[in-house]
Length: 82
Image (cartoon, rainbow, N blue to C red; front, side):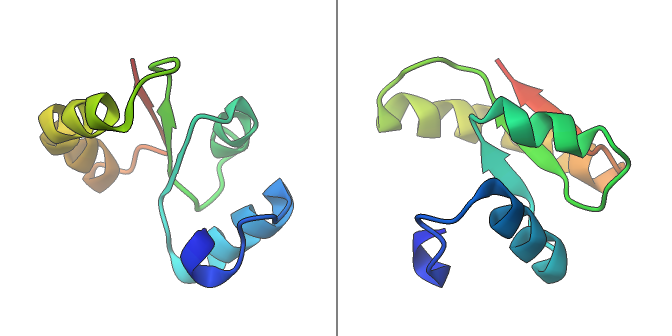
């Protein structure tokens, strides 16, 4: 969200921007996961790995990317990464 000036934005602004631009939200925020289950058009990848270093997070995404993409392509609105 830094790239588009939403670093300090409220959840609703981020959600609306994502919806308007067809984005997938990747977040650790449980609030967004609850929104994704309401039949909306913003898919959410909910990261539930706890506190970890960036390198560990990227490694997890690298190994799970095919599954994440398949879930998104099949229409999943909420994908949890544990």
